[in-house]
Length: 205
Image (cartoon, rainbow, N blue to C red; front, side, top):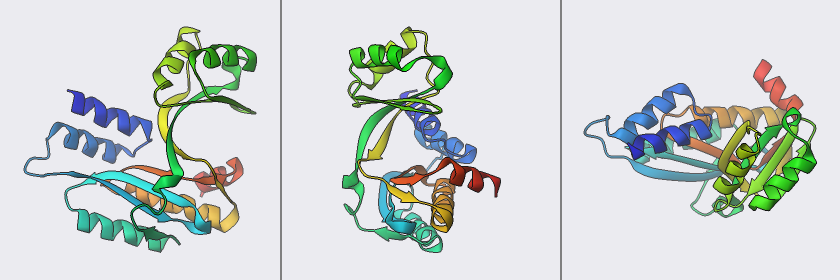
């Protein structure tokens, strides 16, 4: 069932909570009888002016918008109008590989030959960026070379990120988590730049 595969792929790609994955599958297969769903894209701002793009599907748009507006407000953000932040986000293929799986030289040779746009090397590993069009080709070339990606998906990324730390970083993380937990939300994209230390602090709280 292609609708089932789409629901599952989107769920896996966005680290959705288990309950949301179940609902996404039911929506994709029509198991929620008598209910008509429409796609939903909402835009807003979080603490520190971070841009947030929310994607999902809902059977009651007015209710969903009201509830999501409340989540934004509760966590120091605000829901914006259509077009307020969507223009900042562009779809990009993202392939992440742990440092011990390959070398930068080998990965550059494989990925760039296959059409990758850029490779970023960091302490924990490498990130390969592609256009959506070249994503499958680059991912397959990497896997064919015996390098198994830790993550490979098409994401919506912003060209410019907003650095957050301390209370604002923690507040944003709680906002994104609350949005992720909403039953009608499938994916949340934002342009925050938050350190590993802040992410670990949030996970430990």
